[in-house]
Image: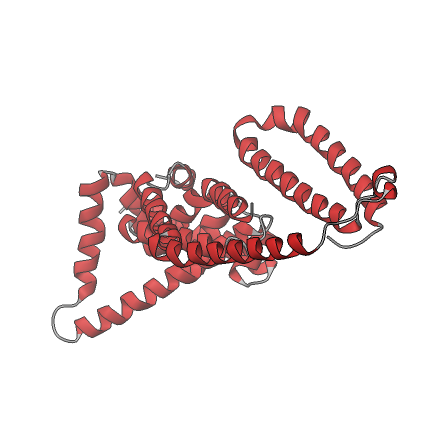
Length: 142
Length: 175
């Protein structure tokens, strides 16, 4: 046995699937203890209470006055607020992170195809989106 | 959305690094059973901290956590051995028996237990540098960050580990 054989043997070693299964089980049980019935009851009651209060509020406001609709409201289209763009940018950030993570995972299997075809397209899209967002929100931090 | 991202990130990191964690912990702990427990612990730690771990620096974080965890296990093991060795013949013999005998029965790999024996003769730092570089494919800089040692020391340790391992393996072939 020499050094090269040792390295080859160590490299060929894989984490046993039983370990990953045990991790999966533990995570599942941790998650179910958070979303289990003991939590659902108080969370459900809280949501129901909020909805009820909201309905009462709408009922009281609705009966006291009717909102006036002016001609200006109909004719002048409103420019979305900066906050709307920020929300959209935040959503896009998640979408791109999702794409990035998926690519990272897929690269292991289809490295060449992804590096040659997919990465340039995604990079262009990210650059264009960044330009668009920067124009709209004027350099505010996300 | 954040929950989904967390799960996705964990899944990807797990997929990429679980083998490396297992190999590294096995080389430090010296047997498969403890390495499996350690890998499980590290992956659960990763799950609990996945939101704080940067995807780009995940490998360093994971390997550092693995090493710290394994060193704690070794410390506990030596404490237990010290306590029990006061009374009778010592736990080390029993543990060696478990490591060697159990290994061959469960995994049937004589080659692997010989490798374990050879690696167990290396000091921990040399062993860590050797496995992280040669087996897990990390770069000098990454190893230096992971083990908190200068890059030059990484190079020195790597060269020493190679020559020590060569000596050990040659000694095994020609008793």
